[in-house]
Image (tube, rainbow, N blue to C red; front, side):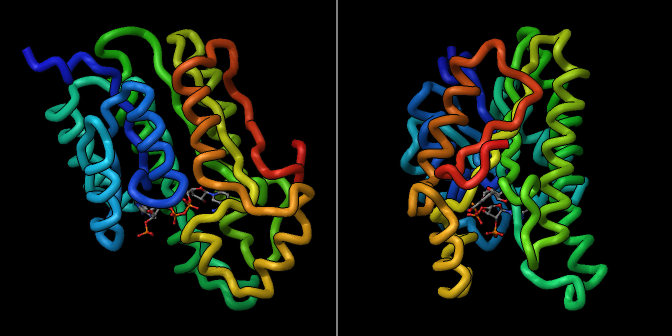
Length: 246
Ligand code: NAP
């Protein structure tokens, strides 16, 4: 018998870089087989993260493309046959003011929340295969609550993700599937490393703890929600060094 078929399975979108990679590593340590979803530009990093895990597999799929999500669902069925945890961690942030932002930029940004919704919808049946329980964790953002200049579609997408968390919690509570958002503040990942120095120092000055967070500080909470929390659902938990309390 293949023992790995009996291990709980966690699927992590954007699981090969930044916060997603930290979630892949910590959930592997927690005993999950981890399915790392990624897209082309980060294939090498994703393979590297996979090589560090005890047990896992890669799932290449662009979440903006429903056909690729369908292929990913078929691959999960073949490689894992069950899903216990879904972390919707993939994201992009297009940084332009309202005058420079185009409809195409807006659609590109919106495609991520649409893809997260569609993946969640399609993966739910796999949650049901073995038992009525599961955990869905959406990685949103502090800026979905505070707003941010130059990131209007991004902040709209993250606010929508938190609304998704709250509504889905109500739809799935009867099946013992708990749904929560983790809302990071400013975290040291490729997404923030690419910001201009002047923006980075402005951000640092605004954080009461005086530093960026680490991806592991987000992953620790994801681990808690995935493994230990049993009476938390439909909520947004902020992790931001004192920047915003909700
Ligand atoms: P990151 O390393 O850029 O992670 C995002 C990942 O999502 C990347 O691997 C990215 O691939 C992938 N991705 C983008 N579009 C995708 C698509 N259509 N289909 C599948 N995967 C896609 O940055 P991060 O900081 O760890 O971000 C992780 C999550 O945390 C994101 O949802 C982000 O919005 C959120 N967050 C981050 C911060 C922060 O300060 N870093 C703060 C609040 C919230 P590519 O690199 O190829 O695009």
